[in-house]
Length: 164
Image (cartoon, rainbow, N blue to C red; front, side, top):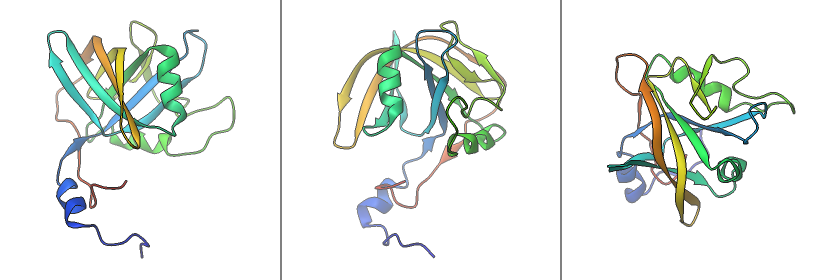
């Protein structure tokens, strides 16, 4: 039984906006620095020439500081076969270990981690950000990317579009 209240009409309507499922990752400038990543669903393409994407990151997330420090991030686009890898990003880890330790990864040209089993990946250079009440929208110019296999992206619907 959940303690969450029944969604409001606006929450129910927003919950019908489909979102993809992604692993957003970065690492500090040094190649031997640990990778950090999180499950994101607020990702959207914003432009065609030059392609730009945006990702909304909670203001209180340490990942935001890491993306700002690195000036770049990768996006692994998940499908039904790779969506099980999300579980690694919901666990707590001891210092020196993290969610990428037991996942097969590849490195983007800038040395950022991407999931080898994902549907596709993108590498983005931060070009700016926009502050919202609870999230920061980070914009990134797409510098590299590849589709790793055929298939359709995983789609997620929320019961309540005003909460996770």
